[in-house]
Length: 96
Figure 1 (cartoon, rainbow, N blue to C red):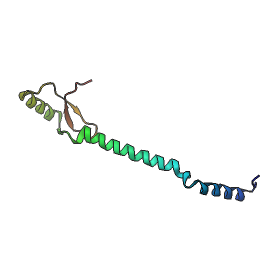
Figure 2: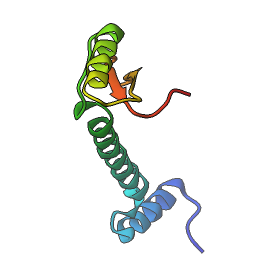
Figure 3: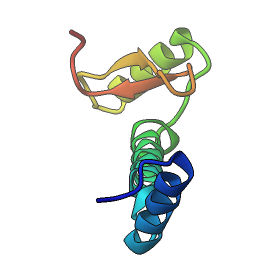
Figure 4: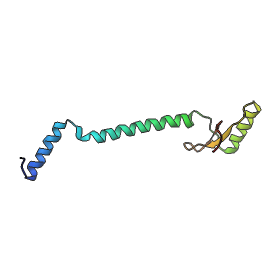
């Protein structure tokens, strides 16, 4: 049976943690890894949803681009406000 003194108990706990080989920080490392994954995923989503597309400063500019596309034979485009850059992008998907 172990000692009941606080200092002896604290020493036993420290020895036990030392035997774990750094597992006491396992949750912190996993949390950092998950944060990095989320950040990379958000960057990729922004790349696909915003940075690859033409950005229009106003909805009027986007409407003019749609009109030009219709003159060229492209129909069914709409525009939407981008949550990343707050500009306007075109889409062929309908509005909900």
